[in-house]
Length: 72
Image 1: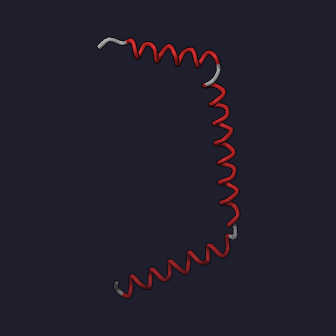
Image 2: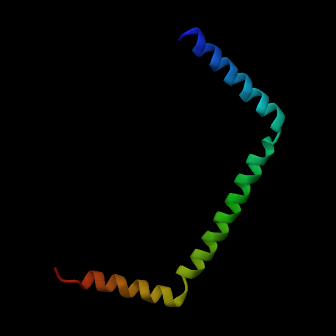
Image 3: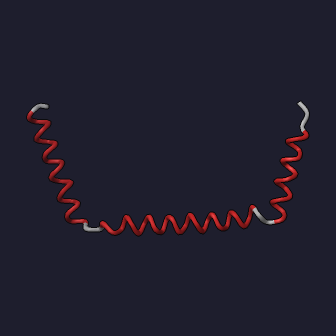
């Protein structure tokens, strides 16, 4: 690497370290993941209830029966 590239790289590293020191929101990432997991679980529960409802189950069974009885 040339001296100019090394100098720019070092300046970039120093800038990133300064930004990290100032921000101080390290706990935010964990809470965001937790909220994402809660939302995903809630969506999964709702989807499970919809899929296991009587109407949807009947329609899925009808689709499968039509697909199995299709003639090629």
